[in-house]
Amino acid sequence: MPPRNRCEHTRGGPPAGCEPARGPDVTHEEFDGGHSVPPALALRAVDWPGAR
Image 1 (cartoon, helix red, strand yellow):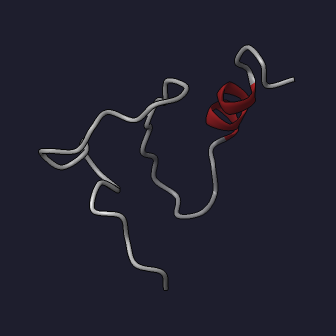
Image 2 (cartoon, helix red, strand yellow; image 1 turned 90 degrees about the horizontal axis):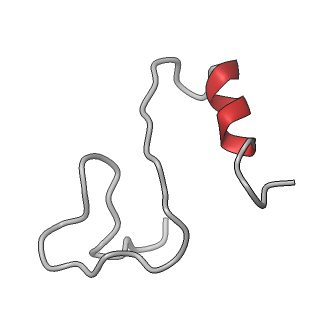
């Protein structure tokens, strides 16, 4: 497994002292179900400007 960047995060927000990410806005949504993405969330993931 590659080493993690100190500013990577999986829950909440980035650790204190990390610069805000540069790039497109990101929406983080957690869901139950392991590796199965709920259909409504999958549709929202591809229904944004520039995705098509």
